[in-house]
Image (cartoon, rainbow, N blue to C red; front, side):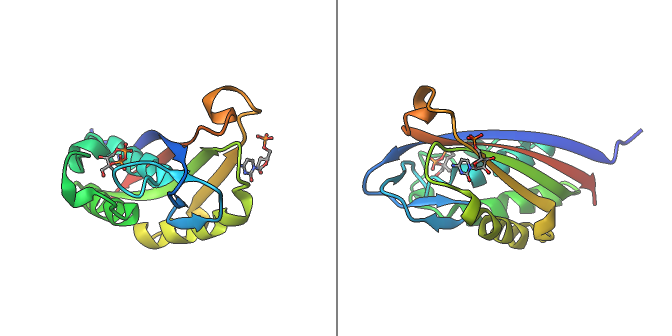
Length: 161
Ligand SMILES: Nc1ccn([C@@H]2O[C@H](COP(=O)(O)O)[C@@H](O)[C@H]2O)c(=O)n1
Ligand SMILES: C[C@@]1(CO)OP(=O)(O)OP(=O)(O)OC[C@H]1O
């Protein structure tokens, strides 16, 4: 029996450092620091990419886009997302919806989540209403609460295409 649905989950975290832009969901958010990484360090899109790859049984982002490969230095994570989702589609799957939580003590994400959902909807070819993005502080606790980094969790549902 072939089951027509798959779920996947992804997690990512990047350190907040000076001299980098803060990019999440493809949106550049005004803030005093940004996320460090080999690519543009978009933790939300990396977690989403991992969730999609995981649901399709295709491994993880580092397997498809190694951080030792100079082609991905400074990469736009929206481009990585589109390439990864192309592989998911090639494997016979399409995304139904996604739900994300950003863990950021600061800045406030609420004003920026509609633009993130619009970007993701465009990249995955789904309505922005199928893209839900939430945000939480870490109540001042631990490395996230000390604003040393920003993390993201994403869950996706895939349906057989
Ligand atoms: N970076 C953030 C964090 C939170 N929010 C919004 O505030 C609400 C309350 O967050 P708590 O962590 O104090 O529970 C949360 O539900 C979000 O609506 C935000 O926009 N950006
Ligand atoms: C995206 C990649 C590749 O440039 O690099 P980073 O930006 O460092 O991101 P990470 O989430 O640590 O891992 C995936 C990497 O392979």
